[in-house]
Length: 389
Length: 131
Ligand SMILES: [Zn+2]
Image 1 (tube, protein in one colour):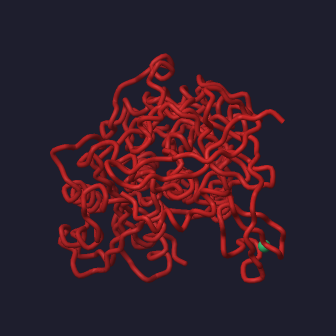
Image 2 (cartoon, each protein chain N blue to C red):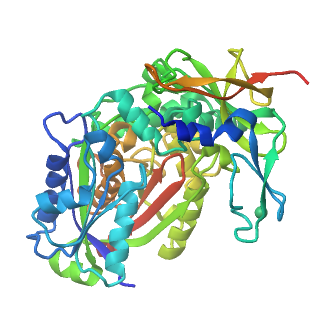
């Protein structure tokens, strides 16, 4: 296996982008990533694209072919990857494997979702498809409800509070306020979260990530080649993925995501690193409870301590381990298929020291954590900037 | 709008809480499985009628319902641990207050209607009991 590096990154503004469609978004992200790598496009051998549901959301399947066509990249192979909200992260892993294996020398990995072209209830039932349609959704479950079931059990087992959940949202909005690509660039306080409308108790509107349009892209090359074309290639030192039951009620525990724990363990083994070595991480905070579980399951904090970590600002920029400097899914937004790629874009900026006012000083090692559904898919990447070692 | 065959295929589980037992490893599954994930090809699956009683393992109250559930919101959705092992997701009815650990029993109810003139879907919900 060859060492693989990110040589270019790009993303669109995340938000309700009514002026732009699916094609415009992915095209913009792809072009930005190629420009960032100073490539013309002729070098590209293959495309991977993470997108969850263009069928229900824009009436278009065969999204990878569309992408190759509109980017002027025919006839190279173009492959769509779907793993619900982890579509982007799993696409990144496919691109990584293609370069690491020696099959391809230059791969573009994109992620995109256009979510505001259909009414809200249709988006909600489409996203519900990430869970078990026959045995969860049929009985009245929604995605917030499934995460609320985790939150309630977590509060019961560890005496966690609604204030601790809210602290995650407050922190992510604080970070998002420093990110010009974020859907919400406005700080909020605990009261705003606690007094917002209940969606599925104990989760309120401000515990939930929004509906978002957006795209992100990265360009991958073997590290040795990458060193010749860019100043700061970002090496992917680990790529790990794990699966778990589709339905939440089939899990042994509701207060951890086993797929996250397994993927994290594998990733740290691959990288020869430990959680304490990580300087900055983007984790999957589709709901506030999800970030608390993630920072425990990855190993940044002990089980049961994630809530107090959030409450005590340990996960803020400047804290023990800055989490979701982009604003996370909560404030930066969650265009489902784009999220996993956006995480890699943000970590690349952080490791290159290009994150402006949200820069984690001297960040050398970063981690991305992308979850599909309620934890049936988890994919983790660890990245480092070799120039800093 | 749902096709009638999907509903018809799920009648044993949704109407009667019938699942499976693996005769090789004795693990009980709900809903029905034809393949034991633990024993894989060595597994031997048979149908199993579950007792209708269980305990609330976690719950939420849904205020933003999906399509088809608007009239019922807010409603309690719980994960119920059946006395014989497996867990399932279901609504808890005839109460506004539940706690983790509450005892419940299965009741047969309308789950949702496909508007305007579609199917009426039936299945299990649960009610609190004292035993
Ligand atoms: Zn078995």
